[in-house]
Length: 523
Length: 96
Figure 1 (cartoon, rainbow over the protein chains, first blue to last red):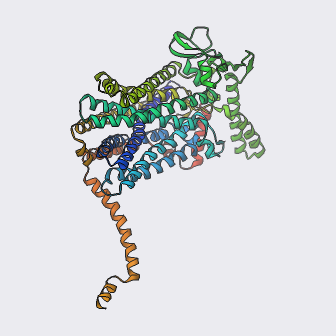
Figure 2: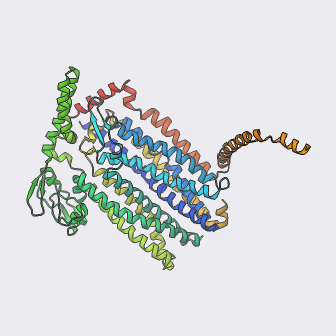
Figure 3: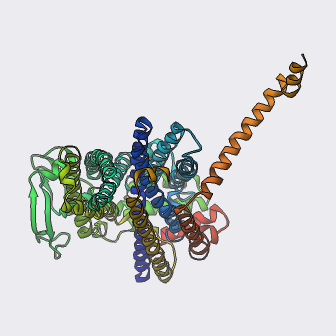
């Protein structure tokens, strides 16, 4: 059992490491592709060589990021086959189909249009080149779509039916998977957050140009484009974040309770803006969950349901199956002890099905299948020993969510200042402190982006597929030592690649900052 | 007359259409070929990046995938039925 926990933990750490590392590059690729496409559009429209120089400079940084990041996501697929083989089989074609589409789209769009982007300046017409750049931008976002659809399905399983004979979930409605609430919110939230990240990156690098008094004109125009992309991006991110919160409240209420450190909910539930969790707080006890908190009245009820007086259940409420009406009357929902019992019934039904199948008993198979279908929505609870096992790590989810929200608030202000500065108060952007803040914000936006993923993925524990399969059941029979070994190997390779990327980027930024616009435009 | 004849011989109407099509096809293929060839030849930073990509792909596919990340179900079982049975056993055992 201890070895199982170690294997699960190390496999989770390994998956987190590779996913987070991959996610360092993806949002910059998505966002920077859009910014480059806008800059090139302005160049094609105005024929101003400055915009050509800007396009080429940011395209170069896009290329460096793309080259270092490309194929880092493939490691996740390796891990599915080795560390998570039960899961890989169990999800069947639901995961396979979107990933196959992603592979084909990514290969054809990226290998074709990126080549035209970089090699085609003097080979194809400006309109064709511009089309290739826009298609690259669209292709990067589309690549993200399919993996996010697959991820969303894990958070909100839809459009499938479990086939006990194949022992896997079979897709029965492709569009229900693609257009589930969670998939739509996740895709729009993630892509818009990528625009934000790239916007901050471009502004931060431009601030360095201004600080060094090199190509200031080019830097100011870069800030204009990046401010619009990032500014619109942060507004869309806020709106889609709201959409995500409503979805989480509906489909993953335990995750929402963990995000808030909420154990006992109420009608008109407040939202903890800033707080420190009480480390001694346990599920079911009477300790105060916070050592310190600053709360916004009615905030969580409004965030979760758009109704400031609605009831939002806490961890204890969910476990006990309690929900309250606005008048304070108690409504019983299915508590977690009951879910565990239903989950075990589902397992028994599956065993009965297998036994009937082995005996050629068609009537027995049909009866067992009926029982299995009825209990299947709680299949995963059958693996739990106690309701407390269904509670995610509260502290990590709570703090990661706050870091994301606070950084998001800061970025909203950041883009407002950038837009005002670049259009009406250009003196602000020539201030050294502002330049340093701009550069420092590059770190903030990456922390924000990674915190979002930590909230989403840690908050859904213990499930690898919500309510259907817990993480510990998804693991393969492998040794902890082999996972530990590959974890450290990945860590070493990733560190080397990251150092390579940063150093190549910094070298190019320094080099191009010393070139004049005409030279860059001819590069 | 002689001039017209020579022009006709050099570029007969029927054949010229076919030749033009073939030339155009060749042109497109050539242009794609030269796009990549000249692009790769003219790279500066790209050379380092391609070297990095190739080293990375080698490490990923020839070291990690080959030696450390086999697809366990594909390696250990020959048919989908056997794989389904293995997952069934694993999932039904782990709840006990």
